[in-house]
Image 1 (cartoon, rainbow, N blue to C red):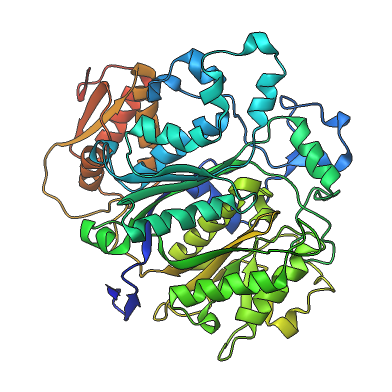
Image 2: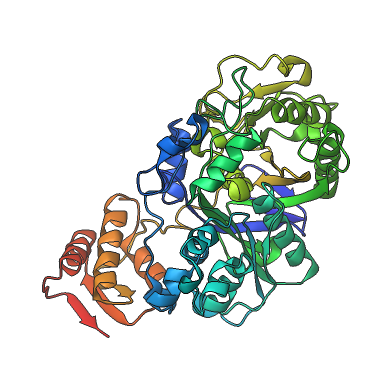
Length: 532
């Protein structure tokens, strides 16, 4: 057992647990992890009408006219990744998004890519949509180029990351329908435990580009006419579609501790199964969902009675919600020895159902909740679904932002569920870790001797360098707790260096911020040095 000491107690975690040491996301109204947490914390949703640059919503039924969309899916910097503009134009934007998310996950973990190039780092991505291929096929045979095949194959979503970043571990795109993102994480954890890779990027992406996919979901009967996910509510009548993606960087816990990494939380274990024969191909099974829960907690070595929160699959469908609630109540809610009702919620109420990436969104929400020891509200819940006997199942829907229900002296335990329409179920068991000493992730203010401090920046191109200076200036200005020495060390040791470079010199916070402002504006300054 690995031991964390946090000043209150020692928390034992199995040696085969997997640590989340970095994460990234691009979600509707939440372009990064901080914005996503703010969306959750503030109990806001990102649902709106279909953007005009996607398709004419008036041509579709009312239920297909809503969704949670990213601001721009057509922007990409191909030169940064060494990709020609011609090839980039033929690439599924899901490939582009996964490249960006993977890079950002490494940066969030303070691991420069130069350190892992050539390593047995695996890439596991959940994705099910092929909207871009449909869009390209509309252009006819004359539009097919030498890049069409690699640009539209779903396998390349993962393979492109491995190729571009030079990662030699397993590389695969997982498609188990709506459970793909969480199954990809489970596969990554299994590969790390077996020694198949030494580090892993796991993610999920989903983009809604053409109206055909929205129409298919509507005619299947899955969409809510109200454009909302009323998870566990009496109004539950379907889901609303969302898009975006997320990624986590995973390490065996023992190695993460040895490397001094900051850890958001750990994945203690998990399980995957299938519903088998039910009343219909897409009809879920209470027995199978109960079984995957029991397997997951048995493998994780966790008593179901000790789990505080479960992030639901929670689509808000009339059939799915009662079945999910029944399984949770049977295995966790009414587990012998439980002291408090099991708290549940769903991020689909905030950003919609990201389909192939839905499980990844649930994982990110839960990891951030454990890291901050707070549980945000599950939205659109007013009247309990009459088909879900919450009291009998000992379940409670989270209705406001609260602190974690147990004191910091006790381990914070949570689960994440994701189910595919073809019956592939996945559940992961997560545990929070004690808060790190201040400044281990972002740097902190420390006593220092007088002297000049260098802040080193780089970018691929002059515009990128200036943009990086402005982002750093804004980031540091908003965080007065950051120490100038810690920022300097982080810039040198935890980021990759690109062709265009600059050094901002200063003896205190104000002079360094002024130097960044001058660099961002392209103005000369005595203590700013530029070069290539």
